[in-house]
Length: 407
Image (cartoon, rainbow, N blue to C red):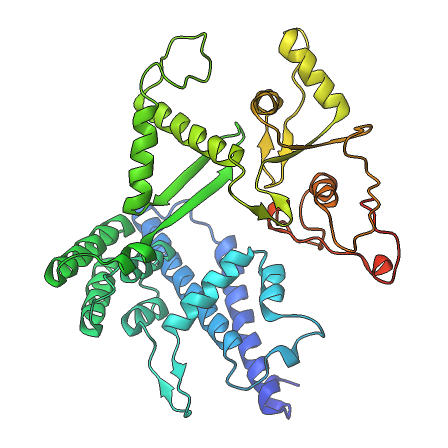
């Protein structure tokens, strides 16, 4: 019996129709994968690449449609239609194998390009109608979309609705013809033009634009930092960078200063951050004074100490910080020589034993440090949050008067 011959409820019929269309797409892609393109020539291959790119963009637009409908289901079948105890965002993260941040980003974008519902019921057009239409037709890539939304978000706070509409029109029109860096340049020009007309950027504009991102740690241990700092932060940076002039604040006082300007700026920031942590004026975080927390093993620490004195001894693998990053043992030893940080050493470290019984029914600083070292972050399945972002609580067995211990 075919789908058309069955008697289906409206929901079942809609699901069956969409699944049938998706099956047709899968079948078409299977034929494309099996197609022979060895003798078609580059002109036709470019045509294929262009059409595939458009189809990919259309698919992404349909995906944003699903995210928008999941966030605001018209049929009212939201969380209640999911398995008990499951949230849509968590299920999307698992099924699509994407990060929580990416799930949030897609929900946020979908909210701006999908039709909206007013409090009284009527449907309102999308907040960004021209961008929505371009995405629906497959005219824009993901980099275009990100560039356009960032440019619109960075318009001066005093910009009028007409300014926003005109900016959206110009950005989308250019994105249909140019790559994303060109669109970004157009966005900066638009923002500067509006700011010049209105007078100047306000404190609200600067507060909205400030951001700092720490990129993932690379194989060599280095991390990329990017963002925008406000004028006050820049003034602080200028002062500390000027202080680390040639010959001053050297990492190694016994070597000549061969640092370039960028390397001195890096060292200036490190000096400022180290002094800030050593000042003990940053308060506490999760019950522990703001400081660097590092975990390692007694064997590795002992080997590292010997390696600093004997080049024939190999330096062990890096220690782990409370933020989840890798800290080379040589850096750890140098940091420990300059100030007192929290160091959790496994095996037989007498100052921080694994058993830490307390009469208090809260997690002490000792408990938290051991949790940093033992669990290395959140213990919830499939969660990758580092220890600095986690709270500490008792397991059910301890809640009713059981042992309060770190073990």
